[in-house]
Each structure stands twice: as C-alpha cells, then as structure tokens.
Length: 84
Image (cartoon, rainbow, N blue to C red; front, side, top):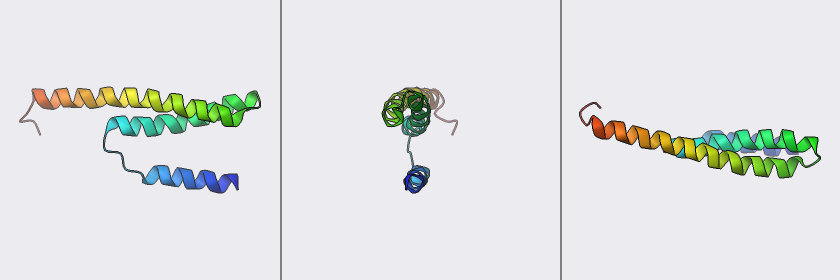
C-alpha cells in the first residue's frame, strides 16, 4: 500500500507544472527534504515525523533559492530589454 501511495505522489509531482523557479525549487526541495528527513527520522524511530519536518524545511529552502533565481532573471531582463 505504501508503494502505491508513494508512486502516485511521485507521478503527481512530475505532472505538476511550475510557473516560476520559486515554485520549482519548493517542489524539489520538499521532495528531497522529505526523503532525507525520513531517512534521518528512521534512525530514531520517527520516519514520518522526520519526513514532515524535512519536507517543510526543504520547501522553504527551495523556495528561497528559486525566488532569488527569479529575481536575478527579472534584473537581467530589465537590463537588456532588446535581448530576447
């Protein structure tokens, strides 16, 4: 059952379209954070809690990095309006 739920979650994540680097970063960060959190949490017997904490931390971190990328792209586009 867990494999089916995980497969559905991965497929849904792959089909989601992100419109910005911030959204993409949050999606990737939450997935990576959940995986790492589950691995680390498993060592203490709390894999589920570790996955939730990791997903939250990963989403925030991924959003921050992606948002800075979006800002950089906007600055470059404003500096070179004819370079499209």
